[in-house]
Length: 391
Image 1: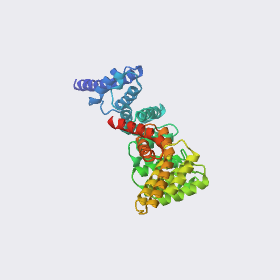
Image 2: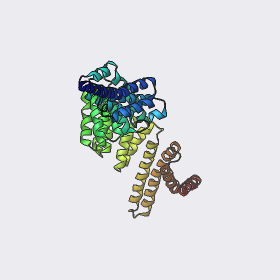
Image 3: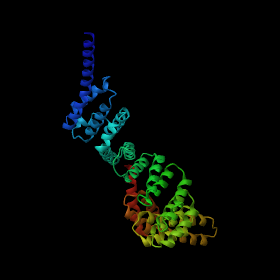
Image 4: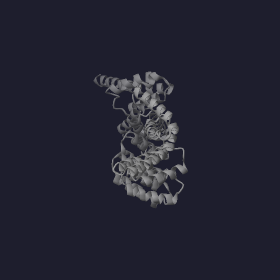
């Protein structure tokens, strides 16, 4: 009788364990049927029961459920987990950890579960990126990378995922992580020179202009026919206030691409900022000849004439001879007049620009004495500026 009693007890305990594990089996069935609320109830119970909470199939079922909620159109099911795909991945990994025989790992590989999870993570990362939720986009892309680099992934590695992760990292201001991903792209020769420029920009984000410059200087040997490298170096030198280096590389770039208006514009602005007005005027005039419809160039050339004329007025004040003083003022006013068409064109290209309006107000005021036709223009621009100040 004693042995019979023990046998009954053992059967009873086994039956109890089976009933708890049966909830997991039921959950998997509910998932297949799309009854995700019942599946979640069953898994939640299995996760707290001592007999099933550490069973690998419990976590495998939870992973399946998390993935299913992500792909569900039902808002109720979508709300079950705040980040279902990340939780799905964690659940699958926990299931593999708890399974000493490796049956779950084989199931994941055979059924290409990690392949589908990687696709889902790409969808999530892309959606988060489009929504400008860059930190969560990065999390999704990084998890996708972990999955596809693992031995549970049955397929070719998508090189684009490293670039996606890099972009999400840059937009999250995580520049060190971005460099890591873009370096991977460069190593895999993905998108040619583009990842190197992203590495350069990431170093600038870190404030490391030395490594940024070194990155650009390494490129001519890798991409000998690429004209954009010099342009990027010019941009870096301008940002770093290394004007002589910038001008040296602008000269090199002009020889290779003499019709590039932006090179003359860049040189003109550098000279303008150095108060070297004659070379600034020469460069900006050439830029306008090549491309006349840009506000910045028109305004820049107008400003160069205005600033040159202002210095001429200042110098005229030191002239004691009345006749010579009057002649110097006339010459300065003639330089002011040269600014007028460029400032008017700048305002035409950008009608609400208060900087161009302010410059024109000053020009009309100075020149209207000798050219009365400018008086109405002066009154009109003054009234417009006064109205804007009241807003």
